[in-house]
Length: 203
Image (cartoon, rainbow, N blue to C red):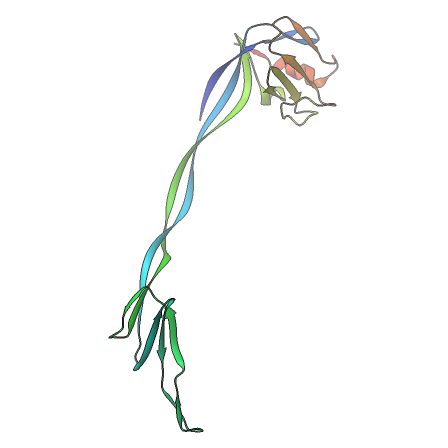
């Protein structure tokens, strides 16, 4: 499990000033958590199996379109003094030998299983950093996202933590193109504000 930092040039930084969160020009970096996992996927082994059938009676026939073979039995009908020829076997075939009354057909069947090991790498944006300060979203109970030039952050305490600030959620938004200071006002009695203030770490 490795943690790497991808640098995305965002002209803001996060610092704490009094009862507000302030943003100032600079580079903001997403902290990305990478995790390598190996999944074990069972797979079927499919093989071609050839079957054969030989007609044991003297009454055998096949058609070529479609390729179907018939094996008959001779039965005496004493009521009308005739013979009946009921079919005792009927099957499609791929090839055959008419002289020995044998047909063959191929079938794809499961003949075993094996384990396929699939290596995957997942990544998750877990925080942001600027210069000597950083915050981890989970620790701060916040999630931030970017849509165009707008970055928005919402609280996982009273919001859904999807990085989209909506009505009723604690959080803030800012425009990356504006490099001046911005005070993002949050109620000073907000438990979430104190949590956000305290979780910004200076390395």
